Image 1 (cartoon, helix red, strand yellow):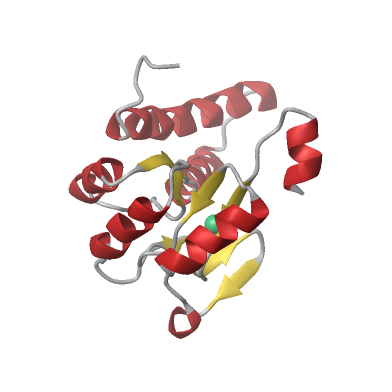
Image 2 (cartoon, helix red, strand yellow; image 1 turned 30 degrees about the vertical axis):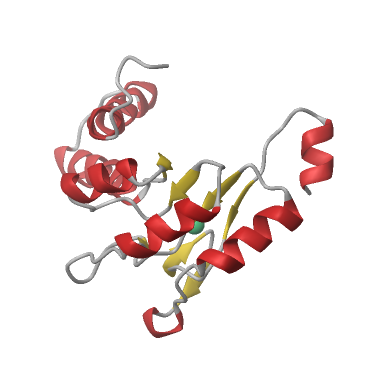
Length: 164
Ligand SMILES: [Zn+2]
């Protein structure tokens, strides 16, 4: 995959370890989650030549059902072994301090989705109650606006505002 992608000027992000929760229709139970091993990560990146590596350090795809606990010592060890940008999936619902610490320890990209989807669904649930005669296109625009609010908050939280 990396050979094909790199030949076309594209990049590849891989996820190593097993993150609990649901992503793209695949569900992993919390007890089956497996943290990223720093040395295995190094070997994997050397062999696969991926451009970005998503780590498993206690992050969860989807909603956190208890207080999030991230293994920052593990993240620091992964960072020591690798010189490519690290990624954190399951960043929805992580407190700002954990986001800050992750950035300090080398995370360059966060994947967030759950709160954006929730906002979208919330918009349509409320719209359904109003019995509005508004045009569908106006509603779609408004639902996009509702999601944009969340996305703008996240861009600020990740320290990316004004950097595009
Ligand atoms: Zn993922």
